[in-house]
Image (tube, rainbow, N blue to C red; front, side, top):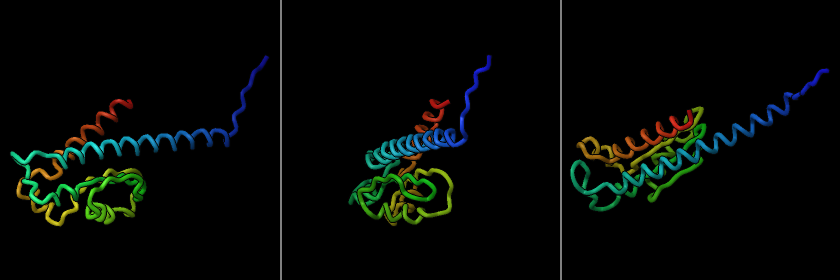
Length: 139
């Protein structure tokens, strides 16, 4: 007696394509969540220690994030459009895969950072930790 299961290549390709789509959706959702939490940290830094005094609100409002897939924005969060314009400078770059960009779009953000103030440092530390924790859970 012989039992045989025949699986067509086309059927497997359809299963793998669905799996790929669901995996990519999970990646985008996770990077979006990491971006939201990281930006929340950067926007809500206390006005003490190594943080700058948020006098006008312009720098904090320029902080936002975007998730890119193959150079195209698939998720984003910006209060002020100046932050989005900083991301647009990177969108469309030849890149295969996913990116989480956290930016401070105010023209003086780098100057504040160079003076030793935390503009995005805490946000970056948080993003890296959250991403590594997520990767470790996937193993």
